[in-house]
Length: 158
Image (cartoon, rainbow, N blue to C red):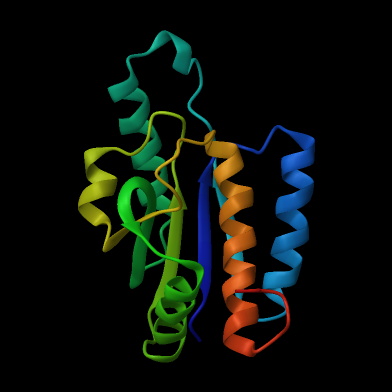
């Protein structure tokens, strides 16, 4: 059975963000098989160059991506969709494949070259820059929103 995954780097330390994420995760799981995977944050990262942090985070991310997954990096240089365009993409993805879909949110420095090399797609939530922990909440809300559109539930307004 196809499943949607969300991989994140490090725990969500801001309680209000973590609470919001958990609320949306519970809602998402009513619609689709969904799992979040948290890879540990790199220890002593402040003492390392950004490239080393990205390399180590990338190795951790690569080690938990479920096999045969369509991998989508949440990246500021990725494709931008409107909510309805994202809903169309997800509708096609959920109905047209047996592959897992794996969304990945990196750490504060972004992704390693290895992660970019593994990605099937890059998705941008906005041209604006957000803290990486807040991206989790924004993404979960948008995923929930598109699922309600797909299911014809009254949540999204245009």
